[in-house]
Length: 216
Image (cartoon, rainbow, N blue to C red; front, side):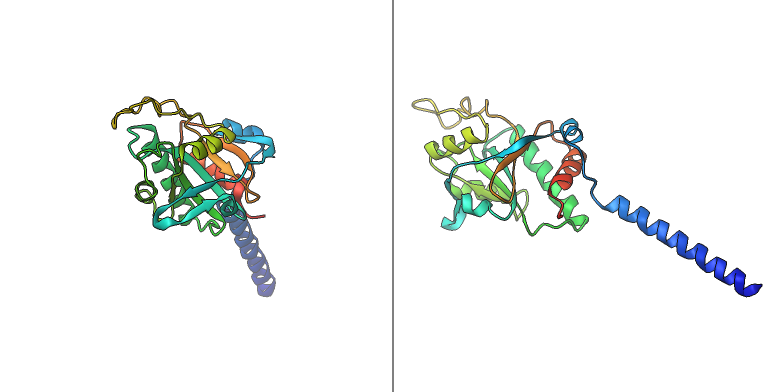
C-alpha cells in the first residue's frame, strides 16, 4: 500500500515538473508570429526579399564595410546622423535596449549586427559616426561614405535622402529632416527583407525581432 502511494506521489511530482518545464520553455522561447501579427507590431516583411547592389562604406580605424559584411548575419541598419536632435537618438536608444534584452535572455547574437549609416557624410566622418554609434552600445558600428554612395544605398532601402543645398551652413539640417525613420532589416543572404516602422517600442521590437531572427 505504502509502495503504491510512493509510486503515485513520484508520478505526480514528475508530471508537475514536466508541466513546469514546458511552461518555462514556453515563456522563454520566442513565438513565431504571422506576417499579420508582425505588421501589427511594427515590422513589415516583403513577400520576397530584395537584392541590393554592392557598396563600400568606412568605419573608424579605416575599416571598410561592404555588402560582403552582411553575408551570414542578420543586420539591422539605421540611417541617421550624429547631430540629429530628436528621432535618431530615440531610435538608437531603443535599439540599445533591444540588445540588452536579447543579452539578458541569452538570445543567440553571434550572427547579429547593428549598423548606423550617416546621412550627413559631409560632416560625419567615419570616426565621428562610429564613436556616436558606440555611445549607445560598444557593439554598434557607425559608417560613412560619399554622398553618391549613400544615395545609392538609401534609394535601394527606401530611405529618402536629399542632396545638401549649395553653401550649406554647418548648423543647417533642413536637407536631413525628411529622411524616412525606419529601421532596416537585412537577412544573412544580404537581402533587404523588411523594416521596423516608428514609433519604436522595446516590447514590440523585441517581440518581432526575436520571431524573425531566432535560430532554426
